[in-house]
Length: 76
Figure 1 (cartoon, rainbow, N blue to C red):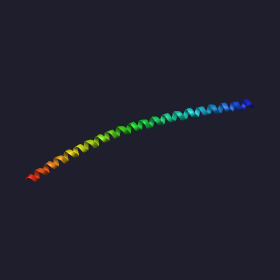
Figure 2: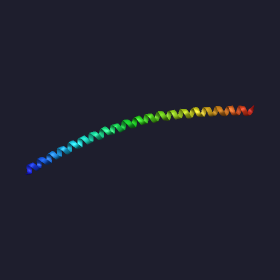
Figure 3: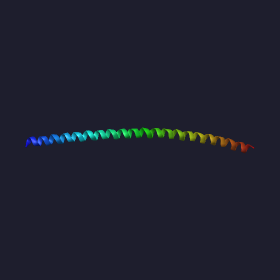
Figure 4: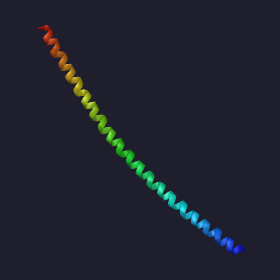
């Protein structure tokens, strides 16, 4: 009876270890996916931010040019 119980406990323990290893492997895999996705989003955001700054610079230049033209018109 004790040997049967010990065998069942050993099998359950082995199965539990297998499940634990599998779940940790899956967690590492998902962590890698999240990390890669975060890196991709960070790169995309950096590109987007650069583009918005370039557009802002163009807008400022155009606004300055427009103001110069308005001043010219007012002095004529």
